[in-house]
Image (cartoon, rainbow, N blue to C red; front, side, top):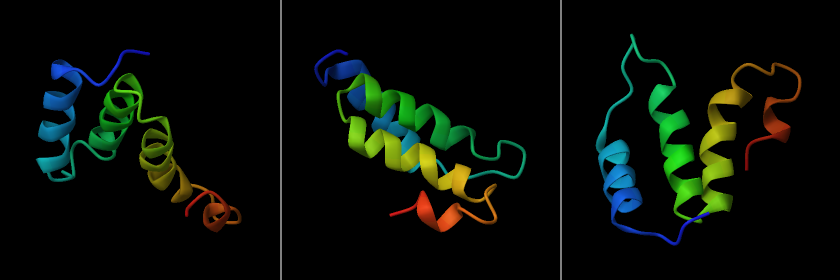
Length: 66
């Protein structure tokens, strides 16, 4: 894992400003989670990755969101 450097910061800023599109689905969240992980923000990355996943878990969705 790299320290939070320039490339990760730029990627995070760009991805956070993007809106979710019908054709892209949860792509933004996937790449945002990867950028956050690369920046060493693992807890935030996990939260971002789990929110879209929770929508696919009808019985356990509430267990993976916080």
